[in-house]
Image (cartoon, rainbow, N blue to C red):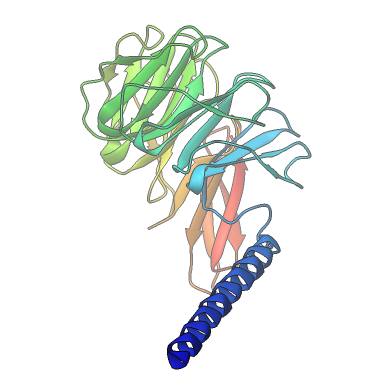
Amino acid sequence: MLKFILQTIRTIATIQTIRTTLTLFTLFTQHSYSQWQWQNPLPQGNILFGSYYLSSNTGWACGDGGTIIKTTDSGNNWVINTTQTKQSIRSVFFVNENTGFACGLYGTVLKSTNGGNIWDKVVLNTTGNLFSVRFLNSTTGFIVGDTGIVFKTSNGGINWSRRTTNVVRTLTSCAARDSIVLSAGLNGTLVRSSDYGETFQIINPNNTNFLFDVMFKDANTAFIAGAYGTILRSVNAGLSWSEHQLPLTGGFIQFRSEMTIQVSLQVTTGTYTKLQTPDQAGQDTGLLHPSSSIQFRHSM
């Protein structure tokens, strides 16, 4: 009997020791994890896919993990906004200093009414991936994405309705000027509306590359940029397009503003590659770059 009592006491003591150890381990790990903070790069490390500047000082960028970050000092410092989602955000646009919209994968749409500090979810009737959001003015806006998706709002984003485009390939970008709306996408896909996005017609840009960005310079002049150095130009509000040849076999082109394009590409380390891009008069401006990963900017 005494032996049984001693064994019971030892068992209870062992259980208490285990409990104490687990408690200390839990407290230690909670304390340790609370001391870890993201250090580099700041303010976060997710891949970024889109950006929009409302002014020379104020802008936003968006990316994976529900990331939206904001700068108010021309990009020198950034703060992380609260988005309430972990889905990848691919495009962000602000109508004014307070009201902004963002869209991303799996039908994600967000709206902010306080300059991007907090974002609320907007329900759209789709689970498709959405790649670009743009507004013509404070009330009329567009969202485009997978399988030729185009959504339009006429009341500042309160309600969205889908428009027919008659294309099935992904639309990656959109732009609006006056009554004209353009949306470009994969494999040379391009649609155009002349009635504020109510109806769309398919346009042949005579190019089958992936098209990633579209913009208006003015009411008549528009540009499309894409893979393999693709730059397309229209002088009749998107009805027809001509190609500007760049001596590139790879690379990715995006528009930084209504007057500036940016080209990113790879060249062999230690060699110089001459790049040419049309200037305002349609001539070529040559630039020399000696690095393996290069970018240049050109005013149009």
